[in-house]
Length: 112
Length: 113
Image 1 (cartoon, each protein chain N blue to C red):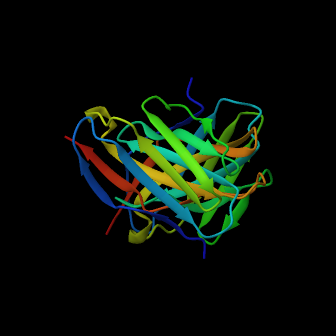
Image 2 (image 1 turned 60 degrees about the vertical axis):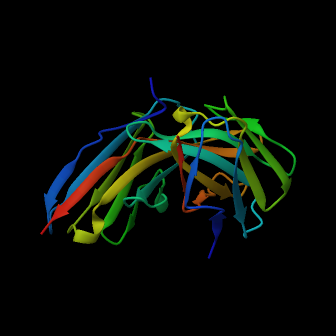
């Protein structure tokens, strides 16, 4: 089983729509969780960290369910500029470094 | 702003050549990483380093080696490039705590002919 699994999509949604992505992780020892965004032919960049209590940043809301080993990202009022691949990322400390396991990403296209 | 730079954006090499990819970060980060990214496979960790002169294998170290002589610089070496090493190579750095995220360089698209 993969460390991190995501639905690859693509998700094609109209502007203004609400869209949700889900992700599951296999290792219950995982300790930190993130969503990264990757634009076409660019490097991944941190979108937001995911906390146990859930957290919100503007139109973006992230949730963590440790019991089900499940992470979600909700995007409200989608903009054209939200079109990108969204990577679910799980951190597990290993020796002296914080290793990250990346999902293969969910591709989102927002349509005018 | 954190800055991670990579020596080349695009590189074309021939089979059997020795290839050096360099990465420099300016945030005094302890940890540095090398990944490759391929369609459908996502980001896969090749090697990482948590201190100068320290290195550890990631998930796919075969055919690669690394060097970290200075804290800010982490090099990936392909001793004898092969066509299956054609890929996007991404370097990243991070601090030490669990909440520290990784900051990526712009990537090097390597083509091995």
